[in-house]
Image 1 (tube, rainbow, N blue to C red):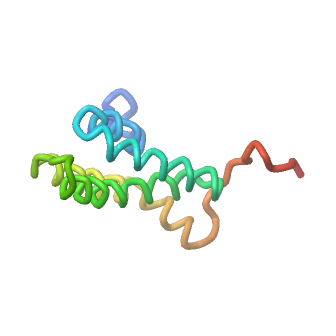
Image 2 (cartoon, rainbow, N blue to C red):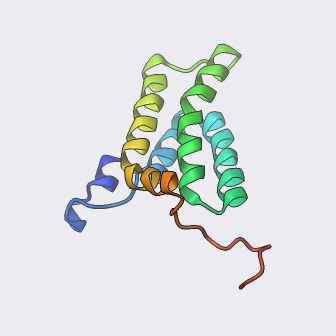
Image 3 (cartoon, rainbow, N blue to C red):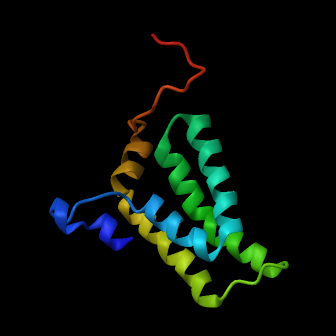
Length: 117
């Protein structure tokens, strides 16, 4: 994940780490990642703002993992803490997006059901 965010091939600039983190965690905790992927798509398509989906899914992941761990899907404590660390990392990499969201200037994408114009 850090290699994706701080890629030496891109001058130590890269992505925000959401997809890389989700891919890594998919192998460790597939059910919580699947639930949070649903949260991501619901909010990203609902608002037209990808960062809203990313931030909400990242915030939900530790909670969903913990809740499922309390049920019948035990999760190793190290993995639980990894979800917290990755959520914090996602919020850190989205600092500029959060600033634009608070200013009402975050970029939106046109959803398929919206008309042009």
